[in-house]
Image 1 (cartoon, rainbow, N blue to C red):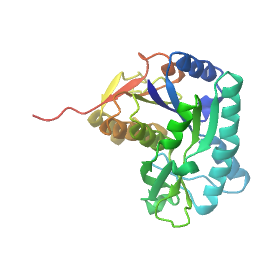
Image 2: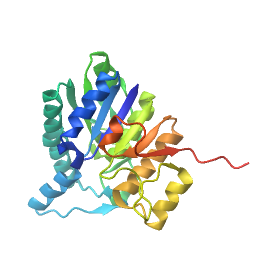
Image 3: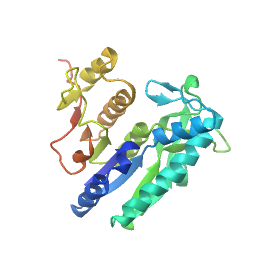
Length: 253
């Protein structure tokens, strides 16, 4: 099974992660891992006297911020995760969305700055690594499709994972969160959501910030033809019954 898994920065230090990834590979899955690292980016920004800013769960990124994002995500965070995976017996290779023309995007919201939307993915690098038996570990940056010099863009990790899953024709997109799934206002996991219900949760404020971004990305993946899309915690990597599954909204008759 072809699976794209987005792992947030907080989950990367959990000792269960490597075990779950290795078990998925032993089951025969071809994995592409997209990682975040927003907390580390924000921490370095603050050390450099730069205050992190967010709109709708997405990081506002100036040209100076982009250099910090690249330094953290494509540098320390990516290589640390790759090292942990290799130590756990996973043949991981760290790459950036800027490498091999993997991710191209456009600046679509000026108020977000150097943030990429309308993402296109060339999956050949991932497929090449899969053929060699490797697990690509991808930092979510991309090239600016409108810049002849190929300037970089910060791409939301959930958006990047969604675009990669669609381009690969993946069997599943799994967005890992710090909670067991999408929670209702009683903090109970919702087992299944369609696009209409997901939008209602966002508009009501029940799902905000990073979870709102995951719901928006997951709904796009469903519309893009990914047959199985889930939001859940690390258990969801090996337990298909956990998390919240996103499905197409019913068609009015």
